[in-house]
Amino acid sequence: MPQYGFHYDAARCTGCKTCEAACRDYHDLPIDITYRHVYEMEGGSFSKDANGCWVTDSFTYYVSFACQHCDHPACTKVCPTGAMHKDDQGFVSVNTERCIGCGYCAMSCPYNAPTVDRSLGHSVKCDGCKDRVAQGQNPICVDACTQRAITFGLVEDLAPSDSRADVAPLPDPALTGPNLYIVSCDAYRPHGDSSVHVANKPEVK
Image (tube, rainbow, N blue to C red):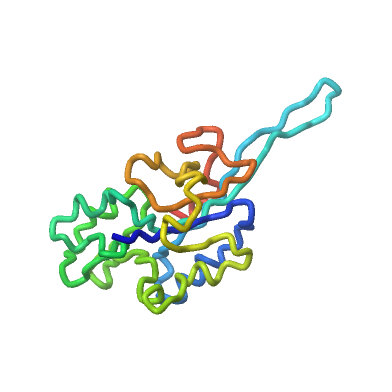
């Protein structure tokens, strides 16, 4: 079975959130739902050196991600109806006719990918823009990225030598086998690192 995934170059990302905005516009999402998230991460502090001058070791970086279309998705394991499923292209999708809106998928996903849209009565999430992919196009977030920080394709064509989503604030990639490969930047901290925090919590919930 083919498996598609995303490749993200953190050294290129400027945190502009165009990927997130393009996704929201393309899928006509309400203001309280987004499929792609851009986390602003920061850490470090200020201190006085021996000469009494203030110095800093502060750092910042961005992490842009959507559904990871994991090898072992937590959301599909807890879905009581089988509505949340992994299709023959490796995309994790919602069968809206079977979904009862219980929210178990949203509670189980360590990436907060699924969301229950109460106005529709079922879960919604990134499906990798599989309709566009079927037509030979990229997901909309990839084409919208001004710095070409996001690329997409079959995982064997990506860069497996790069980190497999091993960056804070994402969880341990061993949990679900996410199909996200990352070119890290100098500021990056690995998953579980407590020296870094999310600076835009209200925005990404």
